Image 1: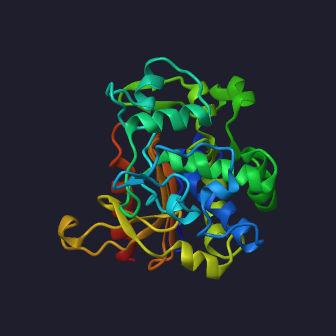
Image 2: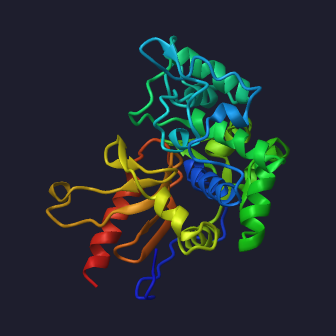
Length: 318
C-alpha cells in the first residue's frame, strides 16, 4: 500500500515472493491492446472475426435467435458486454464448471476447448455486462495474431522488459516444472496443485508476479508509460455493473462501496483489477493510493476487498 505523497508506504510479507495474479492478468491484456491500438493495428470497434478469420465464433453470442458471433467487437469483449459465456466458472448443462473440475483433477485445455465449453453454457445477448474469461482467451488470440508471437512473449517484450519486471511472466506449459516456486493457491483450508490448469488460462488469468513488480506495473499503467493518457481515459469510461460492488469499463474494473455499507464513511473508488486467487491490483485516484496484494485464497473472495475498504478509511484519517 503506497500513497503518491509517501505518507503511506506499507508492505506486509515478502515483496519479491511470486504468486498467481489470476484475473489481474486482464490489465496486462488491456495494456497490450491499447498499445496495438495506438500503433494503428487495432480498432476498438473492429469485429473479433476480422482478426481471427479461422476461429469459429458461432454459438457464443446471440439476440432474438440471430447468431452474433461474427459481429462482436474488440471493445465489447474488453468490456464484458459481448454476451459471451464464462467457460471458467460458468455452469454447463451437467452443472460442472471448469474451475471445479480442475480442482478435482488437474488437466490442461486450449482455446478450442474453451469455445466448446462456452457453447455448452449458452450464448448471451450483447449489451448487458456478463463477466467472461472466454472473452479474454479470445483477446489473447487477437494479440497473438496482431503481434505475430505468443501471448507470453508479447507480455515479456512489451511490458516486463521495458519496466524491468524480472519476476513477472505468463505461466505456460514449459513452466509446469517450476509450479512449486510460486506461492501455493488455497481454496478454503485446502492447498491445491493445478499446474496444468494454470498453464492453460494464460490471457484470462495466467500471470505470475510479485508485490514489487505489481506496483511498478500499476504505476506505469496509470502514469502514461504503458498506455497513453487519451487511451487510458477511454479505458476508464462507460462504467457498467458486472456484479456488486464491481463495475467494468473498457478492460478495467472499478470497486466502489456505497456509504450505507461502510458506516456512512465515504470510500473512494478504486480502479484496476482483482483476481479469483484473492489478488487485488488497484489505484484510488482520488486518494493517490495504490494497493497490490493477495490473500492466496479463492474461497473467501471478499477478504481482499475488506482490505481495500480499511485502507481507504485509514488513509482518509491522515
